[in-house]
Image 1 (tube, rainbow, N blue to C red):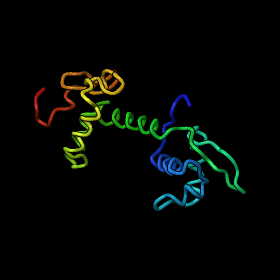
Image 2: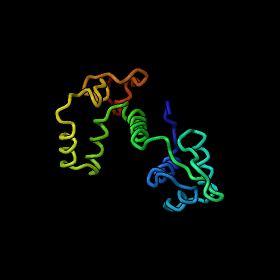
Image 3: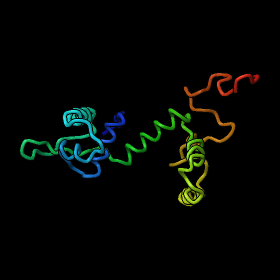
Image 4: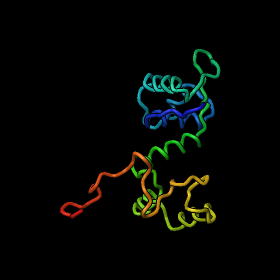
Length: 158
């Protein structure tokens, strides 16, 4: 698959259930969901996932199709994280980590583990891509420029 599809939150939930099983019928996916909508809703979502190329039919068991995903979980997770970072943080990861720390969702031990995993890598980000981690004074990616005064507090001069 060349380009990963854009998926809704519920499409991702269904896809995660399929990844957990490897292969599954719509009934399997429906049964695995917490507080699921009706079966026909899940069926429609799986049909959409198939149209988008995120799932394929493998074989038929009785009257039910068995599906699998040609999309790897790690590739889709990376894509969704990039989309999240681009949407909320202009592509920068540091503000996200700071928010997680403020919310007590990441501990000092977690941060030390992240630092250990990075192993002293440069600030270019993963795979040596410049611009993935922005420090002070770095410009946002093209098309992500902020409007003048957007970050000002009310009543603050430019």
